[in-house]
Length: 158
Image 1: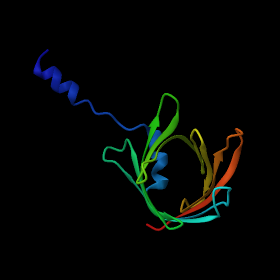
Image 2: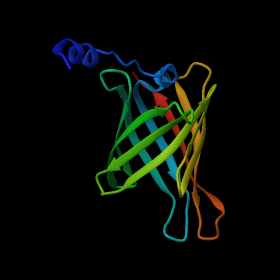
Image 3: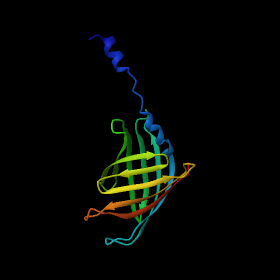
Image 4: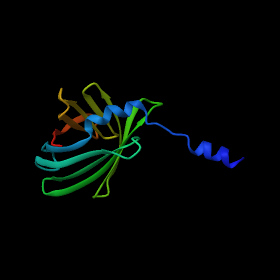
């Protein structure tokens, strides 16, 4: 193999899947407010956070930072969102400051944003102008039934 061949191969430019451009609606800074419902494990708790979404250079992955409080407990999360073209689905991997890790699949159809994990799922809708996302999280119980967990509202501030 000649150096020319190696250089030609290494200069091949990959481009992000066009489906990733739909995630541009997230880019920016959001004020997040929510209410985690009362449960046998505790009373209702408020959630407040700043969520920031930005593209990793290259445009293949959207990086999501969360800096917030659930009640008086500090929560910091980083999430990486990408696109699986073969299955036509978005995927996310999230890691937080309490040692938790979660993986989800997501879909964006028009203004509807749905996220599904093994034990959690979200269903929400963007406003017409794209500056608000309102939705509900649910948890999968031991009885294999989904139960309401949290109402959440993100409002774009930048």
